[in-house]
Image (cartoon, rainbow, N blue to C red; front, side, top):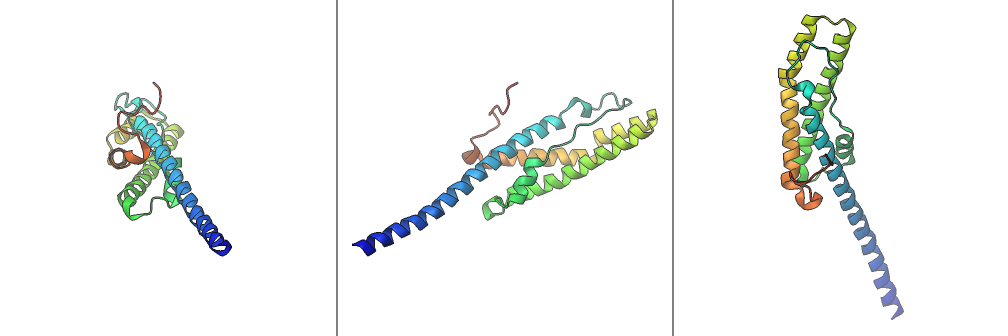
Length: 168
């Protein structure tokens, strides 16, 4: 009996290690998804910030930047490089590329405007940022990614469009 019990114990231990690893990965995946949704919520708020409303085009402004800390962690973690997450990964990398480009443009605008502000420069740059294609593409990509997460990952995150992420 002893060899059989030892074999069963050894098998149970090996299976337990794999199950524990799988559960840990699932928990990490869920935490990343929830954190990513929170970050996207923040970025959606930034995209609707009053400085982007197209008013006061002749005033110099400091534009808020999109956040990408969790997005970078989610992409680099490798957790979402699976067949079932193919579309999510594509949307994340597209959004990352666009937000980097848009944030760089905001940085360049700040440097340009604050180094030698003139009314013409300020109006021109603010108009470009308000109505520009880069901002439009960035916001559309952000909204697509957020909608994809809400539509396809509710079972893992329990977050939907009615979930209050932060108290008002």
